[in-house]
Length: 332
Picture 1: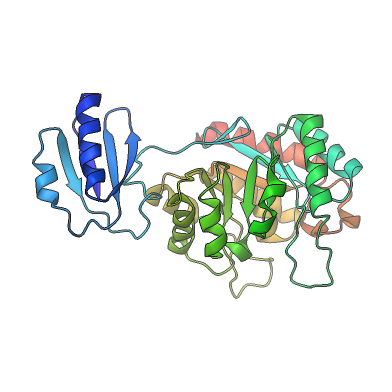
Picture 2: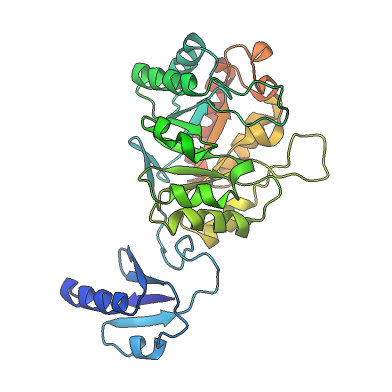
């Protein structure tokens, strides 16, 4: 349920209303817009007298929310959310996230980080813990990889995003600016609930075969715990098509624009699986209104320990970054 207040309501009267609503056993989510304040009522609202609330002279309207996700819906929060990732405002302008699929060495990571920063990247990505389909594939440097990410962060000033697979590892992520939840863990609800209790941004990837509503419900698990710093990421879904690694669903951008206030970024690297397909899909994502893109970059893709086939060289990434900024200027 949402309660829309009239304009120019005094802070004292607003506080009195909120206190009364909380006495009914409801949680109250406050969204301050330029013209209106919206109170999102969370909990069992079935017994709440909507007519009584709407009769109050400071209330403009009361509406019940039909979507199962409450804090993620745009009805609760009409304005677009902006998530601060180490000083980078995701949701304001075009955010470019780049880096290797997997952290391999200090020389490799710091070298790539320096190159992508020169090209205008805002956030460094890199996998320390790597979920792999085969148990015999490279699983990442784990804790050592996190240490190398911190070194690259110190050397370049770029905030870092990397994947968390197990909540028992959370203490190792103190220096990580944004925690990534991969496609395989999108519905790991116990993990999502734990992330709701920390004060750190979460980049939530859509699962390989999940609907948009399921993605938003996973975001709701995090947000209902109190952590509203969630970034949604489309990384391709599994379809019957085999020409690409996955099928990139760019229609998710306008759909999510209507449904939620959360920032939306696109990962064309995992979606296509082929380096030559990444630039056109990245440009298409920017043209469709994505808040950001996440691109895999490797200094020697032929010898990468993970996903070299979909990684751009620093030189090709530099060209793409310039093209993306130009497209953004045209469509913004």
